[in-house]
Length: 60
Image 1 (cartoon, helix red, strand yellow):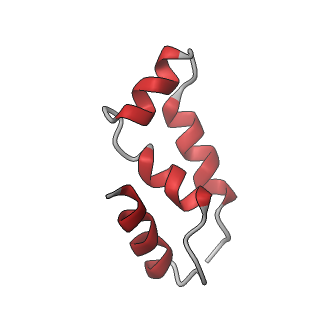
Image 2 (cartoon, helix red, strand yellow):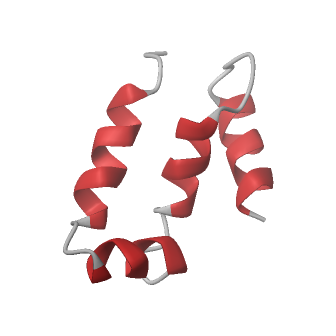
């Protein structure tokens, strides 16, 4: 499902394709999801990674 959300997010942004950054942003959009839980187990702030990934997307 995350890949569909990433594709939809890329389409809405008018990006030519959905890349790994789009997928990461969508995976971390759910603060209680498995990706965020894994990062917390590694003592990494998922909100910060989410924000950093969003900044890496091309400006539109």
